Length: 97
Image (cartoon, rainbow, N blue to C red; front, side, top):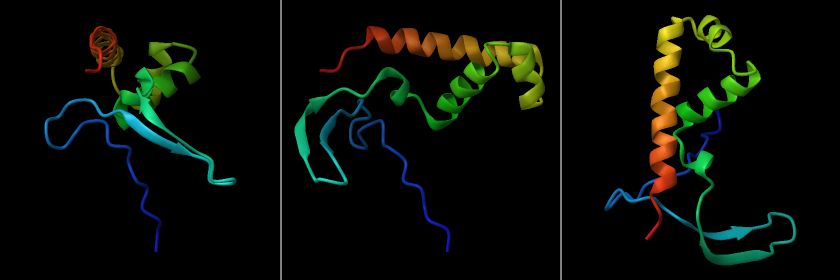
């Protein structure tokens, strides 16, 4: 049976606000750190958006290469990138409460 990969929740299921990290631990020595930590900006992207960013970096930022790899048109890749840029700018302006 294949192991199910758990996905990191990014939003509160009750109010849909961004979640914070409250506990980190070492799986080897069991050291634990508790507090209130913000997720890094890129970690707050969806899995699909993170995959796009990784492909963008691996293609050295070539949208032409990405379009070929993804099997879509250059304008489609450009639109996805523009949407992602807008989302990142918006997320930078939003502070956790």
